[in-house]
Amino acid sequence: MTKPLNFETNRRHFELPEQIEAILNRCRSCEYPKTRQDLIKLAMGSTDEDTFEVAYEVPGKGLVTEATVTRCKNGLAVNYPDPYMRRRDPDCMVVADTGETDKLRFDDRFGCSFETLRNDTFEWLISQQLVVTLFTIGAFEAESGQGAMLIAPKNAGFFSAGLADLQGMVPPDSV
Image 1 (cartoon, rainbow, N blue to C red):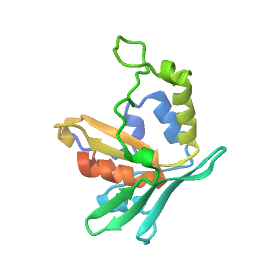
Image 2: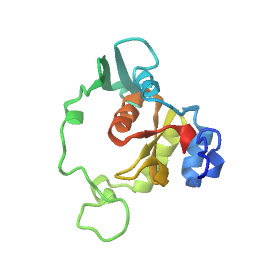
Image 3: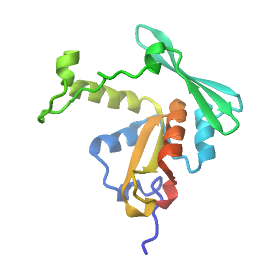
Image 4: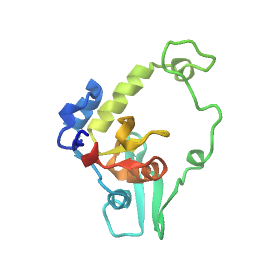
């Protein structure tokens, strides 16, 4: 049996896309939570407070609160103050590639290239403090080598914590 690698310290042994390597190498900081408690702490802004606001500076709008996270007995509760963020939009899916589809294409709906938005998102991530969380996917066990990686802003730790609870977190030192 092969000894697991520590993803945090041995990342070079993993074949990551060039853009992902660039984000992880150039971002302001990068944390690799190891436990659910680490994720809960991140979700609460690394404070002992019972509430935490997830907010971002948006050009032309100022500070915009995306979500409020509240510590609960068994985990976290997240509230999105903007009603639009709380509703399910059945027409939210758009397709960015050029393959065959019966769905609306990104550039047709938004009038610009998806590649531009993708690159802008990568540049924005580079300007952030980030959290990298590894997960199992579907019915695969962690040992199968079939997994996923979430790269998210540190102050949106609630998202990593929720996904870890749903999917199953893989500690970075046991990949």
